[in-house]
Image (tube, rainbow, N blue to C red; front, side):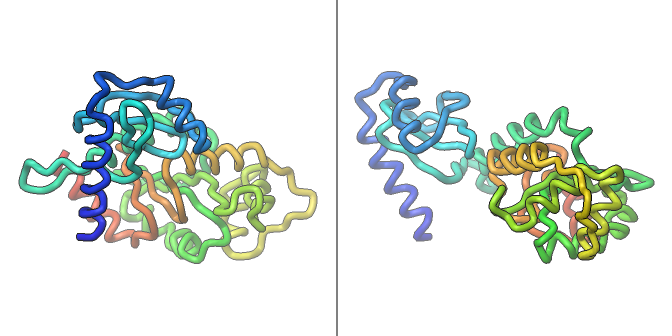
Length: 243
């Protein structure tokens, strides 16, 4: 309740402050956000009068017409049986687009009878990532193909950044990933693909990944955290019936 009250108050202040502006000043919005280290990828009208939906490399913001006020959070539409997370819907569409063309850079564990494909940002030092990996057969048996992208949580400062670079540079990345998840990766003479791991990490940040594992469904929806194979299959089946 506190969250929604605070968000509503901030929205009221923002709308009151920007009511005099007829249309967004894109140059002003860009300048104001650049002071935060953000660059707008697109600026468009939001469902709320006086606030604009601004897509940045670090997610979506809702910004006043002159750029002086912004909200960071999720926008919900509440005129039906259940609130609809409009921000999540938009981010899912963006995420799906960002993943296109990266199939050749993913480490894939295919299901024999594939029903669903889930892309996972993984970190070899993450306990739940290892748990997920050790249960790979269960995911595959459930008809779920798992595709990995790299997300060393501390970026290049991560202690395992080079380890993950070695996995993506290995002749057999799937086997190298198996070895790394079991603490047996041999780094001697390893070819490093630091460029690719850095690219994946930056992509994850842009998609809103803040921890691992982070699962991206085929429609771009993100599921943060570990999901057991049976529960994930049930969720995917349920979503499939709704679509």
